[in-house]
Length: 162
Image: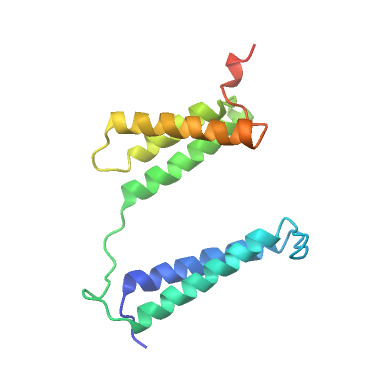
């Protein structure tokens, strides 16, 4: 069989690989039953669904002809690195890193930093749009996590607490 769309083929392989990794990781937790789901049930189900989606996309890439052959372009390194760094920074700022003396900075600061670093992925970063998006996401995250879900997440930096 010949690959008729490189983009779809490699996307399908990526979905199958990530889905397989999640499904495999979920097996280390208790699965439970459909009526009483354990902590591994939902990740296993999502992993299997990702694998199925990847299989369908890969099959489509071998069967359906695309106009330009679905050739892979160059890697977009800047957006890839910006998004990865933004997520790592979010995790580090939310929880802190005592090994290097970084205190937890809280949800609001972590969301603002996440949005500003992710905005650098665009060719033209508009500061006003990033500020509006950060404020909206921070407010929405606060409303969902604190009053609605009642999660015990630090909202502001540790050094501002009395």
